Image 1: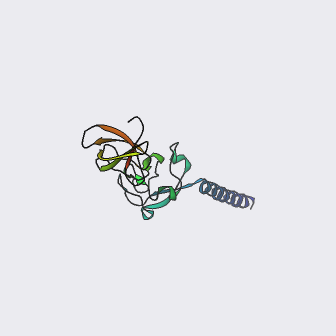
Image 2 (image 1 turned 30 degrees about the horizontal axis):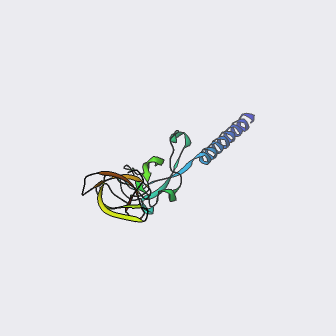
Image 3 (image 1 turned 90 degrees about the horizontal axis):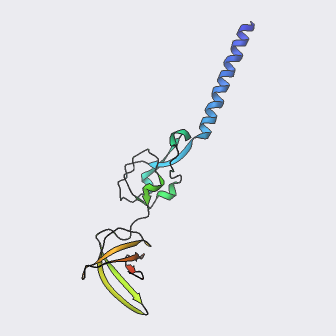
Length: 158
């Protein structure tokens, strides 16, 4: 009789230990936003492209991953993002205002004088980015800051 009681107590203790360890493991899971579909490099990320998935902390390693869905929506993928995989912080960027090779209006302002010409963007960039632009008339390369409207304002010394 004592053997049966001992077996029952040991069995209950094992079940209790299993439940507690499962509960601790579930509490340590980290939920991250992941692509629901493949997102190609240069593609804008929409809300319906993202879902969430739970990861064990030991599977994530030391890499920095995006932890909030709202950080992703409206941004652009820098590389292909695969479904179900966590998204490293350096894999997304703000969308470009100017694309490489695009014709842009170049504005030079100095002492109330404003000169406007056109050039070819040699690099893609978002608003506030410093990019090189080739003047289409002279072939000279100048550097300017991309404005929110897509024009490029030449900085001093360029």
